Image 1 (cartoon, one colour):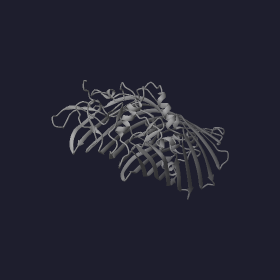
Image 2 (cartoon, rainbow, N blue to C red):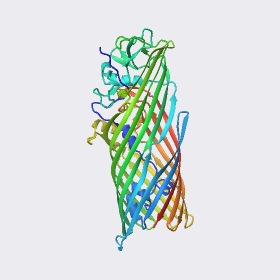
Image 3 (cartoon, rainbow, N blue to C red):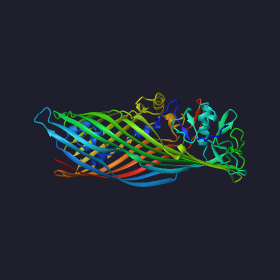
Amino acid sequence: MKKKVLALLLCGLPLVINAQDAFDVLQMSQTELRGTSRFQSMAGAFGALGGDLSVLTQNPAGIGVYRNSDLGITMSLDFNSTKAGMDKLNETKFNVSNVGYVGAIRLDSESVPNLNFGFTYNRLQSYNRHYRGAVGDIPYSMSNYIADEFVNVSDYGIEDLLWDDDFNPYFHGYAPWAAITMTEMKSTAPGGNKGFVGIIYPMGDLMQGLYGNGTSGNAYYEVDERGHADEYNIAFGGNIGNKLYLGIDFGILDLDYWSTQYYREELDNPYIMADNVDLFESDITNVNTSADWGLNNYLHTKGTGVNFKLGLIWRPTQALRLGAAFHTPTYYDMRDTYRVDAWLDGYQNDEMLYSADKSSNGGDENSSTYTISTPWRFMGSVAGVIGTKGILSLDYEYVANQTMRVGNDRGHNYPDVTDRVKEYFKPSHIIRLGAEYRVSPSWSLRAGYSYKTSQVKKDVDDYNLNIVTVGTNPAYQYDNTVQNITCGVGYRHKAFYADMAYVHKIRNSVYNAFSPVVIDDRHGFDNVSADVKDNNDRISLTLGMRF
């Protein structure tokens, strides 16, 4: 048999070629509490209030509330703290999170007092997060997951794992799962034989990973994410009889996401190839053996998208306001560039049997293009104005995560990904509460709270489903809950205003190195996972003028 190099870890989609799957589009669909300092200090509960530059990204009817033009800029200082296991990593980041202008056009009409237009830049999401940790006494190895999913479930043979140096892990000719597995190399054993080594090997009619009876070990992981999603808004709104406010908004989005994800296993008494001369004749042993293997995944995603928002605010009385808004999905054109590096060292009796490392596409980056659409959103709001001093506001937002889609670069959705989106995800619900009290004509105090529910169904959280990922990275992550506790202060003097906000964000997430293996819904294996908790603080300052 001609010996070829087998490439690296690859988890592709069954029978179709695309670059992203369900959990990837979930990652790219997130938003967070950002905007002007007044907006943040009241936890974003502005759906029925309006009159703030941030409402263009929330309820565009709020632009119709303006009686004067508004120009402002918001700067933020983020203090991020992320803990996974016993490890905690801290980072500080400065950014300009909102810049905007609203032009108010007064009309000599009682029925339509004014028509307004606005332009804003708003940071919707910061992807900056860095965490790492270790899992001791792992119950299972990623190599066994690869063996089970690629061959034992998908019924592909070991011959299907042999590839050339320049293979592209997204555009492979075989289907659903592939692996870091064997690579042709120079043995470090006496005699210098050449042959195959790998993290999975034949065992009768099935494939076996490194982990078996008597095997134990630890896993190590590190995730470093960077980037942002920014939205540029163009909005128009008006006021009908000082009772009904209407607005429309067109959003243009820019997304830039980077990630490096590292995974490593150190195993005692793993099942390794004792004789690596021929893959199909090698002896497998776990007598006084050890193995050290892992991989680094690099991904850069860039995208541009568009969306549309429609909103209204109704003021039945001076003290009561009701609001509603609808957001279409954001339709993105995306491009990924990526690479994966992997290594494997095998030992017996403390002597190295083999050492191999490899990079996809000979170390060069691969690329792919595709489309995604994020969830549609609906918002309902109510606010009460208490005399001339107080405001209480409540917002509810419904996020239809089950409506996310992934398609090819011509916009045709992949039906199998659509099925997985519906299988994995459920709607998220966001509650926002905000209050403002005017201490004096110039000074105001504010506070707020928001809560976002889980995005995944119970079977995902309970590890009862096989989770499909794509490309070269089997890891996936999701949020269980996100909370924001906020407060702030505002100052007004003639045309000038200044607002400050403090936001404490608590985010509880789950990191999974790979999917649990569930066969015929009857038995499964725990994967390697960890709880990740963010306790982030933000201080923001908004400076502006109304004229």
